[in-house]
Image (cartoon, rainbow over all chains, first blue to last red; front, side, top):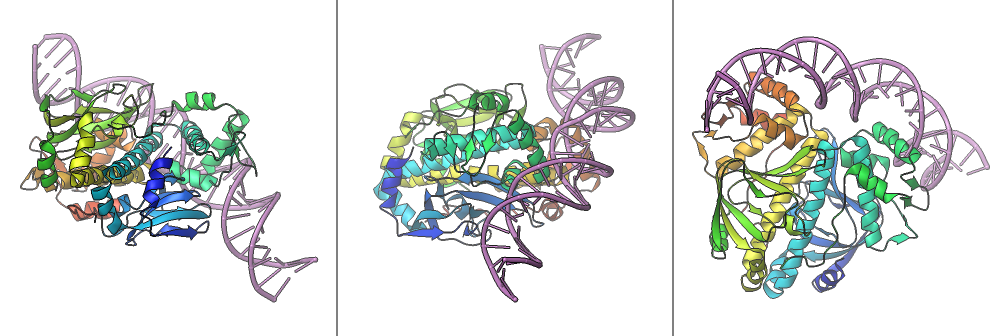
Amino acid sequence: VVDDELEHLQKFKSGERHVDAGDMVIAEGATPGRLYTVLEGWAIRFKTLSDGRRQILNFLLPGDFLGLQERLSDVSPVGVEALTPMRLCSFPLSGLWPLYARFPSLGFDVTWLVAHEESIVDDTLLSVGRRTALESVAMLLLHLHKRATQLDLATDGCVAFPVTQTHIADALGLSLVHVNRTMRRLRQLGLYALDAEGLRLPNPRALARLADWYGTPPRVRPLI
Amino acid sequence: VVDDELEHLQKFKSGERHVDAGDMVIAEGATPGRLYTVLEGWAIRFKTLSDGRRQILNFLLPGDFLGLQERLSDVSPVGVEALTPMRLCSFPLSGLWPLYARFPSLGFDVTWLVAHEESIVDDTLLSVGRRTALESVAMLLLHLHKRATQLDLATDGCVAFPVTQTHIADALGLSLVHVNRTMRRLRQLGLYALDAEGLRLPNPRALARLADWYGTPPRVRPLI
DNA sequence: CGACATGTTGAGATGGATCAACACTTGTGG
DNA sequence: CCACAAGTGTTGATCCATCTCAACATGTCG
């Protein structure tokens, strides 16, 4: 989707960063001075309350941008944790302004990426607030499968899926146990299959109907 | 907070729009060709499922920007409804790119506004997903009161409050009845008072502790 | 005056939470 | 090679935060 933007942004990179699965890319409460784009791998962006309750805000896949929302205050209010080994394109926060000044079209693209991420969070908020557990899980599986497929991460409709039931629970504001039971229902309905190979959705349209969610047709450079 | 940006953005305006309380600024499913900044008044940004369940994504106050997330696809996936009479600064979508090209710093500010709105939605998602009803309502009241105060809408700690319990329910993914009972508890705890004058928070620090939410110190032009 | 929006309260129902096991796999150190 | 811990998935039993249904009160407005 954003190949073009990615390529340009990389000219500003000051280095690549590699992290392992489970590593924190940005720790909650840290003061990161870097921005990243994801080149490879999956991550979660999350917040936690002081007693440990955690909410996953969204999943980060290749092409996603991170570090901007995190920099609105001195201390990052969110954490970012790798779900798989990752390759990140890194550049300093101080490089952002020159980028806008000299390549306004890239600034434009950054805005687009941020707005796009927000629209995903909007959708999740609708799920968590108003959808039932079954509907929410249906939408999340469909959403992630679709994104991965659009990034060419699918082989024959099957995408590697590093997301555990715990992650799904934390993304949808549900308990682990209830996610487990809900996913059993979806599985028995034949709406998804998951094994070592990855995630498969035999009937995506039924999932979409169930979740009342029909993704947005992707547009490159949609503004202007 | 954003007076400076507002002033510049207004140079691009193609007109002012006035709407009454209850009017739709942007209808769900419409294809708006305009962007707005709020000059005066309150609004909600929301999504609805096809059976009518509604989720408010965030509240729009003076200085907020709208129309960008809405324009990521051909059809606006969200609606915007005025809670009070509003005055909006309007300019055409086609004016956005020239703005970036000729005044990169304004592009920068637009990015900041979008990222800031996302951080608010992030906080709400944490509430809806992981906070209890009492905590969620506490945070919402505190958040709105703080924003209004920062915009100088408070007189003597009291802000006009056009938000009904139905809105709070739809913002927090709760039922109207439960919001009513929850607010009664908060009222009896002396944590808020609401009358024709407006909303008053006698003990904001207790609310913050209850909600485990300590807003971000506002920064103007925080990037660079 | 009635219609409508908003707030309030009670009673009962339920989706989802919590607590508690247990199975399976993987990695690790002795 | 085995014992063990840690992560993940699964299932049953029970509880409760919140929902739904149903009234009713109040204020506003045409």
